[in-house]
View 1 (cartoon, rainbow, N blue to C red):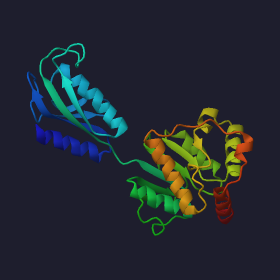
View 2: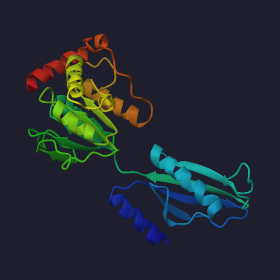
View 3: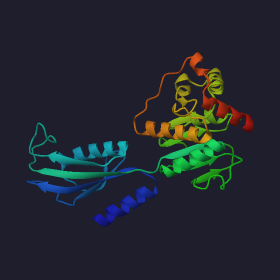
View 4: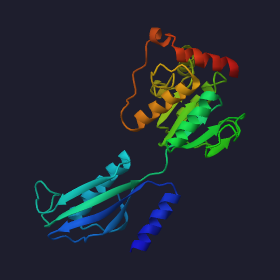
Length: 282
C-alpha cells in the first residue's frame, strides 16, 4: 500500500500537481483507520490512494486537505467521532488525530523584459523559492544565473504558459510594454504588474481601455508595480515588487480600486529611477 502511495506522490510531484498527504498519528476508541494510516488527496479533494477511515472521517479529512493546499500550510486536526452534533457528523465512536501536509509546485515568476530591476527581482524571487522565467530577446544566462528558463523569443504564451500560480512582471521599460501586458492579461495569472513610472502606467492602462480591453482585466494590473516603500534604487524597487507578490500570495494584500488622475501623476523617487531606466531602454 505505502509503495503505491509513495510512487503516486512522486508521479504527481513530477507532473507539477498539488496534493496533500494525510497521516493518522493517534487513534483512541473505535475507528476504522489505524495509527500510521495514510491517504493522498488531490487538488480536487479526492483520495487518489490510501485510507484514513470511513465516511465519518474521510469527508472531514478531504475538506481540511483542500484548505491546506490552498493556504500551503500543514495542519494537525482532531476528529471527534463520538459526537454526532459537534464532531464530524456521525457517531462512529473514538477520536483520531490526523496530520495533513500539502505539497504544491513552486510558484512561477515570469519577467518579461530586461533591466537592472529585472535582474535583482529574479535573484530575490529565486531565494524566495520561485521558479523564474525570463522572456526577452536580449536576455542572457549570465545576467540571470538562477532562472529556470531564459526565453529569447518574442513573448509567446505557448513558450511561457501562464497559470493560476504564475506571477507576471512586465519590465520592458517603455518598449511597447502594452503588447506583453495585453498577452499577460489573456492568461489566468495570479498577479500582473507593470514596472513603469506613474505617468507611463496611466498612459498604458488608458491605451488598453481605449483599444477595447475589458475594464475588469485592466483593473487587475498593479501599476506601478510594487509596494510603497519609498524605494529609490533599482534594488529597492525590486524588493518592493517582491514584497507585493509575497503579501498578495499570503493573503495580506487585496486589489485596490483605481487611483484618480491626480494621484497617478504624483512623482516619487521610484518614478525618477524608473523614468531613467525607461530612457535607457527606449
